[in-house]
Length: 357
Image 1 (tube, rainbow, N blue to C red):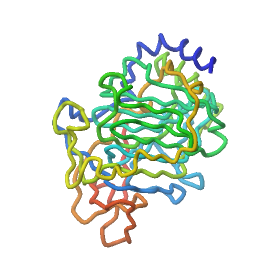
Image 2 (tube, rainbow, N blue to C red):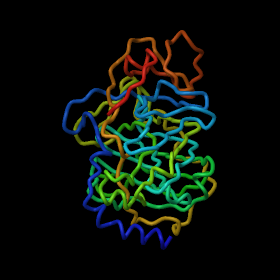
Image 3 (cartoon, helix red, strand yellow):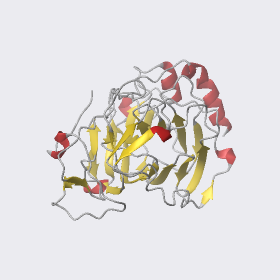
């Protein structure tokens, strides 16, 4: 713990002046422009990536699939493989099994992010296999990095560990293998910083220690990165996403960025909330396992764009509980929560993949 505090203090000056503009991006910010409605998940999906890719997630870079699920490999400067959901959740629960990438300067990231740049993060630094970092941001305000925390844990690189993000209008809980390591209430968050708008799910790996990055980022990532020691791979075996709201699309009713202004087409905000406050945690980590002095940048590095095109598809397409978008008559649907029509890009229906520079 003392070493974590010292590392944070050493990096604070550089990080304080660093804006993560390359890592936090939206193609249309609804607080300053009129944007398309966000495609709602409106249900729960349970994706087994060991069975291959699903078209409810689009790829940048080159994720690969195998017995470890989806794998994100950094082998040279500029590599930043990532998956981004075509859907959004409006409050919800995300559970996943992840093996973090090793390597000084290498960062494994799992992020929820909205069009107005609310954000909830998990991040793992390859230089230390016994820590995970939690973080949050609101409305893209990334000029200070005092919201992050480090959490001690077992080996996160040698095998898969189960993680949870459980997010409501009142609190966010970060959980590791059945233990709640952090709880943030809306009342305890910094002013105007509590995440509360529809979020996409994004995860992948990147090199924070690359020489092209700002000095503060390299220091935070405990780089520099030595690519001759790679390649460096992060894997996600499975993923379950539960949307606590229902409907087909989420829209911003005004420019406040408040959750009470979000409207649902054909559904209800918090319509799936149910027993969201009842977590399956078996323990709560002691306060000594984290520190509020951690300084952590926003977003997944190496990516300067965001999937936020919510063009409507023809009627008759649905998402199965396995996260596959299919014609309504082509598969037996086994929804965990009510099935809704899903909207995404025409290329996805054709089996295509989207890439961003």
